[in-house]
Image 1 (cartoon, helix red, strand yellow):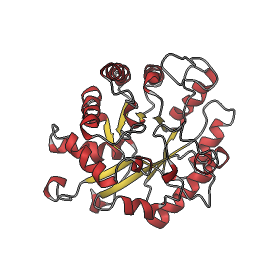
Image 2: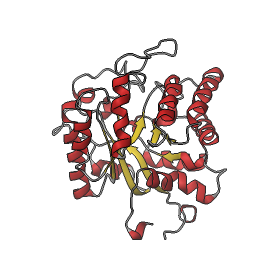
Image 3: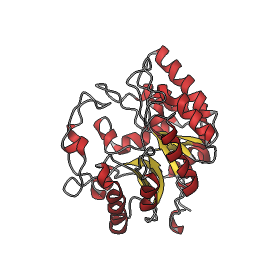
Image 4: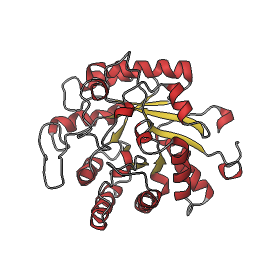
Length: 314
């Protein structure tokens, strides 16, 4: 057993959400062809338009004991979605990371199961991230449109996660969380995890009140977890006081047992370094007991993504 993080100034984490890419081997339209900072939630992301490989991840995370990582699909060209999974297994074999893979497959296509089975040929695959159709603002609705969370074809494809023992990484704007709660209620045996704390983009008092209400609806479904990740805001610096409020509210709503740390690197590097991020989140968990704090930073992700560490790391 390793000494506790509090005793050695090195925090142990399982990074439940990060990305890797090699722009010479794969096609990533958002990085290579369709650069548009107006549509990216953090604004200018020119700094991301370069390779981010395991060596770069390890350099970024220096000073943090990263026990394991979870790679979440990086919007590689959808014709290469299985190729991304294969490449990530090559990275694991050569560099030891990632240790679990969340792949991509559309839910509303006739070939959904074919793609799921193709991903499942690779042993690190644990779940799928497939973004449903969403609206640009809370005032708009896409309910029932093709690819939305009410679309019968989408729901049929989603049901295959249960059949194949896969989890769902949920990434939607906060105003869609009540719809996601309906999906979670329909499929209570599909583990789900909300990406990026549900995106509390509106930090006004009224905006935070709405966000908390939507989060509370989702949290009523016991099969839903949440990632404490990506607190960056468009055209604003990283603010620990503001972000600590988000973390503590999320903990209060979901409970520490269903929260997990995630870096969202390299995207989060547009606002903060890896070690400062880890240390900030560690401080935000100061009201928890030591074992609860460490569960949020590592243990909960190990359990959710079914990652087995070598004996020396447990």
